[in-house]
Length: 256
Image (cartoon, rainbow, N blue to C red):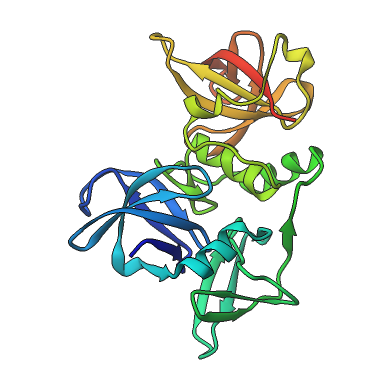
């Protein structure tokens, strides 16, 4: 197998080819990938969206031939803009989709994944949106619980949250916080930030370990235990519940 697509809502991408290995990210419905290596029941993949690599179970994905892979991976992207919805395949079996699920070959309320045809009557989003829509999308993830490696409203981590908000709105972010911090233009002061810009935070060793999306009036939405809204100042994130700083500000970036 050379190419594939995810036909389930989300599946684990693991560091090593084992069910006991750490989940480092998730492959979402409609996302395509290239196969780098096979190891028994496992495939090492290279994701097309963010170039992330890891191991997935072969039985949880669908293979694509080169012609279909090229068409799907290079065509205009459509995403579900619904928090949670159901779609039915041709046999009327239900499939759950969450916010940001890809809808390959979408047209007039239907789409297909590796020979499976689905009908979809929910809200669809496609193309580059206005910057203000980033905040609108971010609010949809409020109270999503933290999940290491997660990328859905069922469970998400800090960089998965920022990545998915940007992805749904037509912009590409890398997977991890330190990778995302390499993108965009540096902003010198919080006052220069616009809603939708990114802030990054480091640890005592200077490693970037956290990120969030800047809101109006010195607030930030980020995932810390859950997706929540806190204050941000020149020192970092100030937790409105515990009344103390939790993350040390390193840099603020503007992607567009």
